[in-house]
Image (cartoon, rainbow, N blue to C red; front, side, top):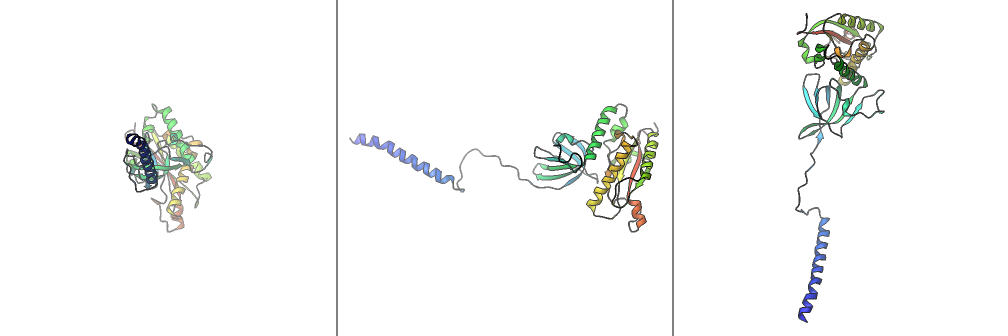
Length: 287
């Protein structure tokens, strides 16, 4: 009888022990101080807000972009599936979903970043529709004319920092009203005359640089100088028939490099300009 009693009691005790353990685990599961041994879960990298980077895409390899700023410094920024890519306005804004295929060499961009242990990651990349159009035309034109236009193709990689590689054959300045970026009739005439002169120069390229006077803050003037340069680029290519692959990447320099003092109205008028430079590579000059 004692043997039978002990055997029937064992499963009862086991069940009680199991319930007790289950109840203990259930209670512990709500306790944040409990540490449970097991496989180590990889922690997500900690991201903090990084700097805003504004410059030109000068190289790309996979998901990494090399951005060269106006002062010649280069920054490598990674992109991923979470990176938002959009235009800053115009026909494409809000109507088409852009992919990383739009990030072409020579495209001026503004990038918001996150800082991680591995470097900078782009959270948002914006650019202008006209800049994308120009970069696309340059890429297509370069592909079509590579063999015939070796000098022009190589020049597409050039920036302001490489200006010493070229001889300046001529400079034409066109001027703008305060806060404006539309071309005057006289400016349009001068641009086509400059394009004709460049066309008559062997191996000639063009470098277009926009400027402002000192009226307005730095961000406003940077945008305005870029709009002025873009207006000139568009007119040279569309009206004057200057080929995109013979154009160095345009840039805006805001109120840098003034031609005259900004202390007078006359001086300011001279500084509200776009300079169109006719260049020839030193290695090809005279050939």
